[in-house]
Image (cartoon, rainbow, N blue to C red; front, side):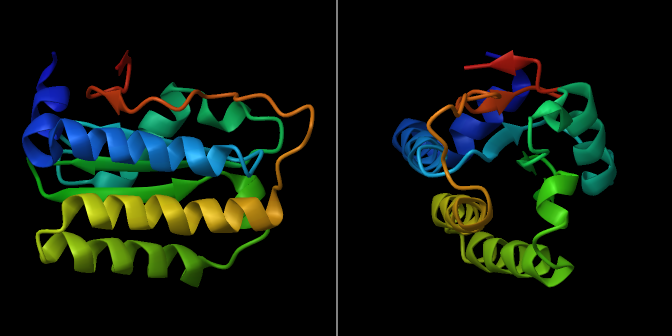
Length: 156
């Protein structure tokens, strides 16, 4: 277990992590879009810059419709970022992303970590299902497992 995975288990616990996985899998059955959740140790105070680096390093932009989303959490810093690929940005305005982040932050500030993260997954999933519905030939391009590690190279 690496440091990021340890922090995730401290913050959420096994049952919450199972609920998070279930939320990801549930929405990915309704959409060709991809939702990736990653826990990382440090963003060096720059969560969005680090999230973009993780997105690129893990080739999340290589989905057929450019419709991957990444929610990355930095538990040590109490920071997080939510980003999406260009296919999604052509469909939804910036205020959608701002609303998702604000809703998650509100829950996190109340100490409702699992509710905040699952709420974010649900909002992303609803939009992905609306604009990128599941197709018969759909492939799970990025997997459904939560990723752990500073570069998201470690998967559970």
